[in-house]
Image (cartoon, rainbow, N blue to C red; front, side, top):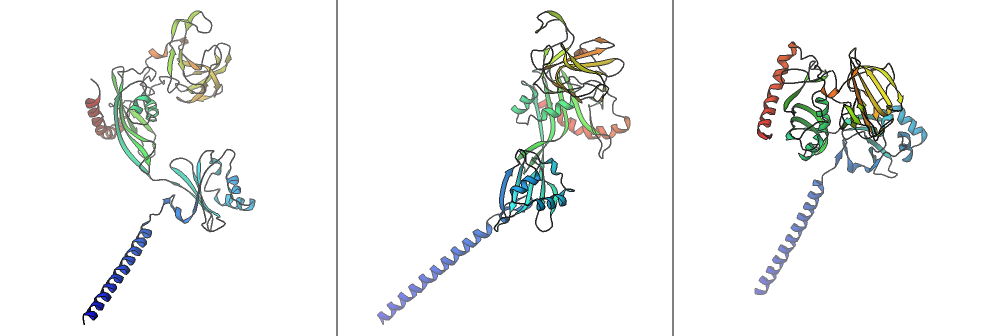
Length: 416
């Protein structure tokens, strides 16, 4: 009897052990299955990457769309058929060297190309789907807009100040355009300051892709605070203009300078020692040093009166603005306009060089008033017309909350 009980206990123990082993094995299999199911898929450009063999490449020098397909084994007939079907949807001439593209190939040999994705910039891309019926379309990556506020005292240049405050220096381009008529960026002083409320664009919430818009800004220059707020008279599709807190336009007849960013190396001076001729003589212009090839802008609307070359001026352009004012731009590396051509304020008329009597790349900017050369930096030009009365109620309603916000950050953060 005792022996029988011992045997039964042994069998029971063995069965229990087997049950535990089976249970653990099932649990392990279940865990493995769950892990496989939970493995995330990678989605890019609207496609699941695991469904293809993915090849990332870059457009090389001399590549065309046809050559890119030929490298993948497409025949001339196949290339022609693809081009014919997508030519109305995509401009294949816009493919640029250095831009990335992705090939999605079949998982099955011989791994034929099924989808081509060309990224024209950080946001926009084009898809050519070769599966079944060939189709092509343009899309954009999701863009996130982040609102930011910055205020700072100028330390060095505007770009350097922005960079030091963790803001992309590209904002300096926006500010230079907004204040082109109001702030002389070649005379920014250490006590100058600014504040901006603006919106930045990000792809995938992390990749910065530029400035979306400026809601409002102020610039303290030579002790004066200059506000600027964007406004569209036609709220649907109208062009954007900037006005101050009193609805006065920031634009004036002349830009402050013919270059966006540079430095003044020589001012208008009735007696200056000429660095090339080594003599004392009048310098009837203002010299702006800049890298060779920098675009030179006409400072006001007008008609090109003269273009040409002289041994002293080098390549030059002279623009007549009206019966009172004319401007001239000297030492260009290349002239970009012709005599008699009508130009608008800010149009590129040439490029910085060192032709003629010049020691280095710069533009000598000369200014005539009633036939006499004068110093443009001391002229007072009338601003454009203020905002029409019929728009003012909407304008002030739009800018008031932004101005309050700008005033609050000015009071808190700027040095007194």
